[in-house]
Amino acid sequence: MQSHDDIYTRQLDREKRAREEAERLLEQKSRELYKQAKERNRALTALADSEKRYRLIVELSPDAIVIESKGKIVFVNHTARLLFKESQSRTLKGLSVLDITAPQNRAQATEVIKLSYRALIHDKPMNLLCVLIVRYSRCQSGVPL
Image 1 (cartoon, rainbow, N blue to C red):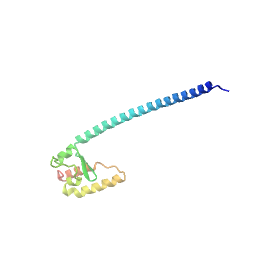
Image 2 (cartoon, helix red, strand yellow):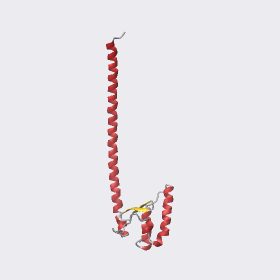
Image 3 (cartoon, helix red, strand yellow):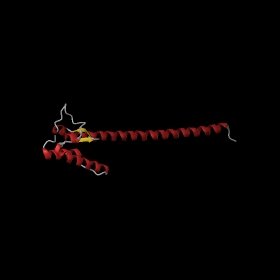
């Protein structure tokens, strides 16, 4: 028969090995989480840099860029602000693209909008809708106001 000391010694050894294994797994998981956090931060930094570059390209574009969401203008770049003579008393945000389209071109603009929404539903890529409308209006009638 085994003595109590032998039993306690084996039990203590098992507990010690289990604790060492738990510490090893915890250290491994900590390293993995640190690596994931570092990669995530790197990706977020790269995304922020990319967004800054894109925003700068859009803002400095020689083409008027107007972004509409849910029927209302939510963004206008510098060129569009100049083209549509935006001022503090006359802001473009909140208007519809049709509000800034020349009256004689609204029917065509409406068709372009309908086509673009149909294309979006069917996952067909299209050029920037508002840029097309602005260019079309400008070519047809000068400044589209």
